[in-house]
Length: 173
Image 1 (tube, one colour):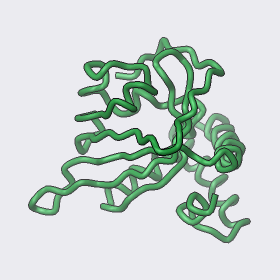
Image 2 (cartoon, rainbow, N blue to C red):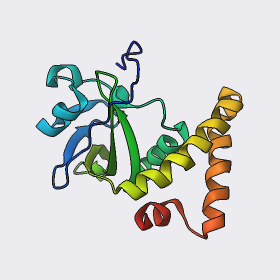
Image 3 (cartoon, helix red, strand yellow):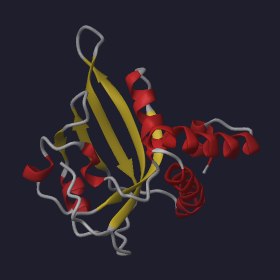
Image 4 (cartoon, one colour):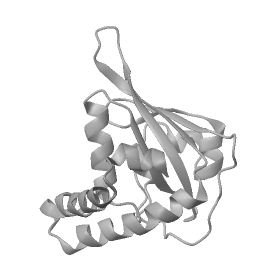
């Protein structure tokens, strides 16, 4: 369960190149395994993470729309790539370039998800920070039931101006 008492601060932990944060979840997003790098960067111990929803590390700067895109792709059996800002237990944060892929059982049904996160390019983080802030403002200015649609409108306008899909934009950064 996400700890709502964590107060975000400006203490960034930069994921080092060549280090990978890895986790797996069940189909509902509950953490089933984590590696030591996830524990190190998140600040949680394995027992706190195991069985928790993966959003335990969701930073409030992240627009809800990005997670809607992720869930839509994953539930359709597709991989998702994206830049994500995560919240540490101590209120700090770390940016990652995430690759999340569905895992399938012997019947071809989704049995969970595996996420591998690596260090993002600083230029990519700078690019998505501005976009994500615009998406968040649109979400916050909207009613809760229309927030994701408002964020999607901002994202679609941005992508149309670049002539790219979300995946093309993320990969090109």
